[in-house]
Length: 206
Image (cartoon, rainbow, N blue to C red; front, side):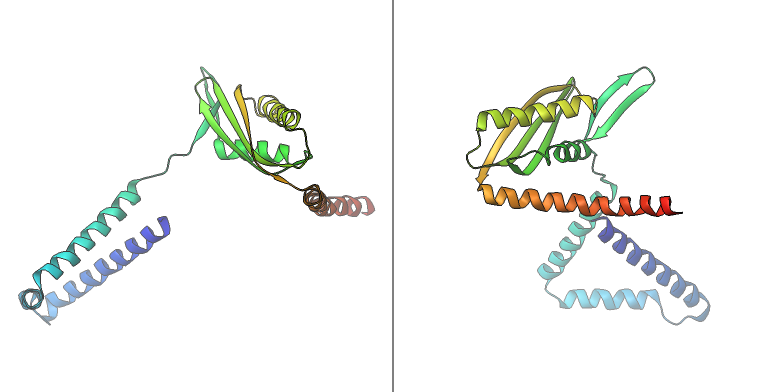
């Protein structure tokens, strides 16, 4: 929406610039009279159905108001408080917290399609985890393991006080599918590590 607002603002500015230039030139050359232009516009509007004219003007007004509202409206970034003291506060965006906890759970076996949502509270955070489990896995033990891992990571690595950690199984995946996903994740990790090892080898050769 911000790009659309900028386009509209550029068009309006260009229109004002052209209007100003034409007005300045007309002052010295008398190419036309503003009253004649006004008469033409009024005569045209009188020939058109007044309901259609009113409807068009209403849409123009509504679009203008919407653009104006979005121009001044700024989406508030949702954050969670890590710590606060007399000198200030330490805040982290919820999107960052969710992605960090999700990445910490990617390497765990028997879970896939993990999603993490954070609910900030005045005295800590609530972690809601959603994922698929592999078929045949012990649901109680596995979900407890996932909840403890997420809670420990959020408290030790990110510095949050975890009030509660909830887990929701959104489905089950066959073992073969789970293994294929784990192999793909391992390959992605290897591909990411290869450039680093090559750079280290090149530095050693130099």
